[in-house]
Each structure stands twice: as C-alpha cells, then as structure tokens.
Length: 106
Image 1 (cartoon, rainbow, N blue to C red):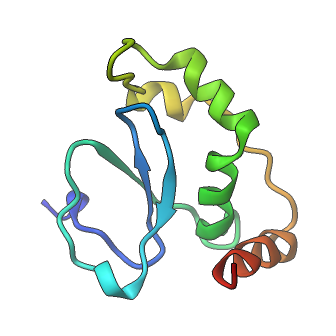
Image 2 (cartoon, rainbow, N blue to C red):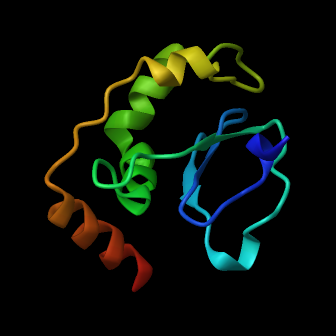
C-alpha cells in the first residue's frame, strides 16, 4: 500500500500523455497519493541524485528514447518495463548534485 505514497526524494514520472516529464517530490507534497498516470522512481542513495534523474529524463535526448517506446498516438503510454530498460548515463555524484542544485535556483 505504501508504494503509491510520495516520499521526499522520489521522482514522479508522468507515463501517459504528450508530455512525458519527471519531477522530484519535495516536502510540500510528501505523503500525497500518486495516481496511476505516474511511476514513482526511487534512486539508490549515492548512485543517482533524484534531482539529476528528473533533469535527465526531461532532456530532449532521453525524451526521444521515451517516444520510441511509447505506445498509442492520442495519449502515448510508456510501460514500466520500457522505462526500466532505458539507460541513464550517470556522472559522478558531485556533478549530479551540482546539476540538481542549479535547477532549484532557476
């Protein structure tokens, strides 16, 4: 039952629709129930910074990969297995943290 409850640091990925974006969960929405339109991505601490992961997913190159696996035309849908099979290139943690931190101040 707790799998659909948002936690600080989760990445919410919108898996249906024309905009397949991602965002991080902050304290203001912690505990919210996440609808079936989203996947909750939980990164391993020390491996992937959630802010970096959301940023990476939103980049045009990764969005192109998503478009190739999305099914449907009116309301494209990315299956859980499809996103699990995509590759995210992870720089060192300090670089990830700098990218994630820079997004907070935009």
